[in-house]
Length: 276
Image (cartoon, rainbow, N blue to C red; front, top):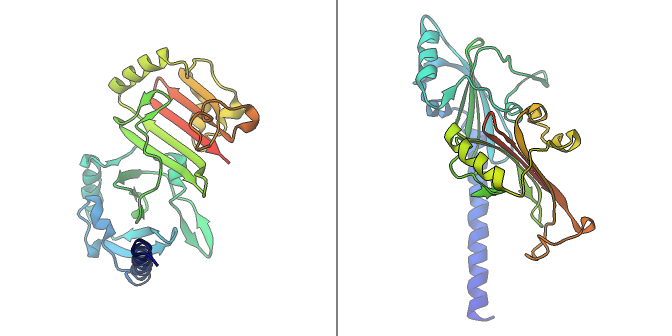
């Protein structure tokens, strides 16, 4: 065996060993570290004595979901509400419905939806949290590993680096990079003006509203159907390594489609890509 081949073999073995022990380490953390301090990451100055109990639900091997029941006595509620009001990462602005699906409770193997009255919402560094003031509960969701989404700098002629908020529902996967991209980008009013100027000139976009059967692909954002002032894009796509064929293919050769919707009034871009 040549030295190069031996070196490749050694590197592969070392890499697989590291991955194996990393998986074991995460498994041990998830299994035995039931007493946690994740609630302290949310800027609310909560302490151990503020937590009545914590229920930990497993989302998947690399993620975790928790529900904290709080002890709130005296003027604790007023103090917490004041912190929520002044913290830049907490807001009364509701998550999109596909994010809300992360949050639930279980009783006797039945799933219980959240009481959606008087909630505050948090999102930072991959952490999603909800503070339920009415029922004195804190819901916490985080993945240990970042999503492997396509980190675009431009979508359909729109520069998206300078977004105000971004939500990702699904990403591509599979051996051939098939699957789905489902992104929602929200921009400031100033950025929105720049985007609208671009859309007016772009051949990819039109003011003509798409048919509902196409817009139905935005299943977690039904508000797309009721947009009154928008720009629209629809095109079939071909997933291929041939750069020329990506832009020159027949309908029979298409492997999927992409849809773009820009809400002019709310400065929100909805983007859907699928390939099979």
